[in-house]
Image 1: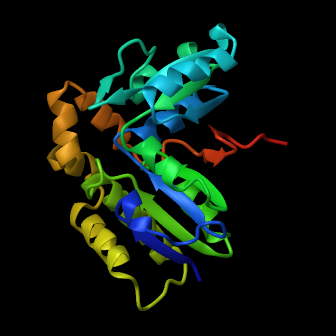
Image 2: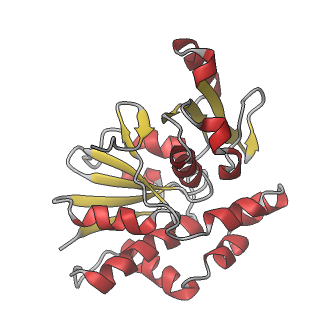
Image 3: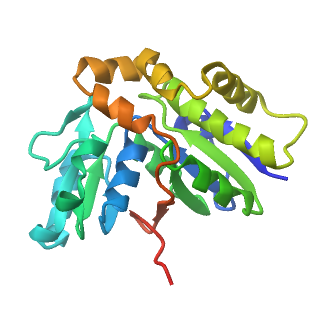
Length: 244
């Protein structure tokens, strides 16, 4: 039986002990989606650094030609950075074989908050099934931690968690008495079903990004199960497991 709980915002973790837990970080608009895409397109790894000034300083630890600065504040690319937080920017010809020092408003803050967890992976609509399947084999408690928006509830992140729960429900045995946050996530999924783009277009953050000219990002991030990779966050870097 899968033992899990949806956490609406990283602040909702409170003081609970994380060292024996698997944390799935969900920030579909857009950090999770961008990280997944960058790694699929050949990036060596993503190094999350919340403070943009510290991110720039981190450049000095690497050869300039091997590293890129990526990130956003208020949805827009940080001045002086190579890339923003649009997954569409992270094309293979740009990111292949390069490290990315990555600074975003919500996703990186969430990673910082859960860094003491026993295991941390990155999830979203893009890789939902492979992440859900991986979680099934974890022997302990799983926390689906939604990045939210600046400490507030996020419709798209919570619905993504609900889709993952629905997938488990169809295949595996789940607790009969579930936590309220799990039930809310499932209710949201039942309302929107496969209409992920629709929910993004009406969500607070989705509307904000659309107004900034990033509607194509919503269309990309709304795709479900187009990638079969699981990014792991360990020792300060997000990367894909080495095959073989």
